[in-house]
Image 1 (cartoon, one colour):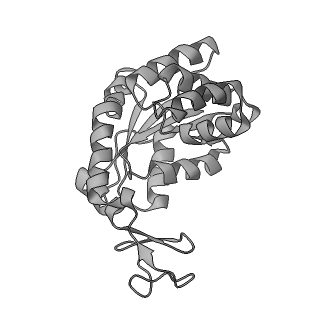
Image 2: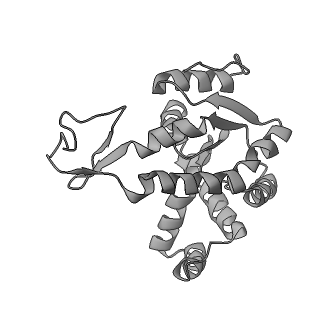
Length: 223
């Protein structure tokens, strides 16, 4: 079973990707992890990517796709895979389709995590991180016992720059411009499944499994 996860930053697709990876015993794969590993291991593709990264340029879509497909041919992907954060645009999606077709592979499900803009802002801007140990908290969903102090080590909690509202708005703008068109792309291919991203982890997991198994495909869990 080959799955793609799409959705706004903070929609919960990363959390559910890990849950599904354990449920179906298939690996979850992100381009960030692949790029870092290829560069670290100095593979031929990693060396090519490093040239662009050292210049501060984006790694070309075709090269990113080639790295992803190389990863998908490893032994742990024989039963399937979950792609999180890839493809990021229509060009990458088209290149992925072309390459997978030559390998007699295809995508079975594209899960679109639907969460409203204002909820994304609330989720991401409320995150706080410990300066000492890196423990994560949230001012609404996971508060520390003492405000501003880490329960684990007593360190100071702070808001990372990428969790500030203006940064989140910028990330969401990039998503809407470049990644959101994938929703219509996969809808036309009849692969898209809408997932209501509001609810508990187990509740959303149950919804996803029902969708994958063809049960209540059009239903959504109300938050």
